[in-house]
Image (cartoon, rainbow, N blue to C red; front, side, top):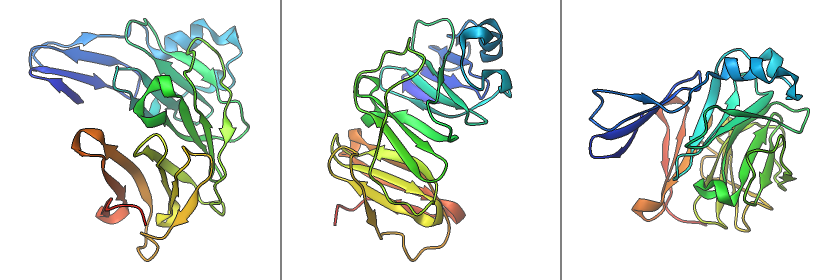
Length: 223
């Protein structure tokens, strides 16, 4: 559930439903008119790889400031997008044989592009305004040496400063918009995994990284 203002909030579910309330939660209005299952059954001949194996749920929903969403199928074999005003989610091919770990918007803005992490520690970025009606997108692989550790999340502090986190509390930072990353040792001596990294523009780009066993790291500046 995301608070959008006085008495207004937005709620999403793992089945792809999006609801909005404008009276403090007393009533909720559905924004998506068709379930993801129904959409995939209707367009199963469209050629979306993995759609026929959809298990009925999505993971890792990310929302941009204008209300657009991107989500990954629970098996990681394709992804879906939705924008306000659309009646249903649009499925897209992942364009790679590797499974998707996570996806999101470049600097939280759909018009700046998409990022995608894959099994094996791969990171792909499309740094351009995306046409969500397309089946697949052109991604460029970032230069990031993870040693095979999976990447669980990516956070943009600015258009140029980008952070990625993953297994065994690994952290990586880029200062060229995500083209090349270097290893950051901030969490090197802490056991566990990092799952999320997020920066808050409304609070001066303050940043936090969330990990296992209650680990919470605060951004204090670049080394």
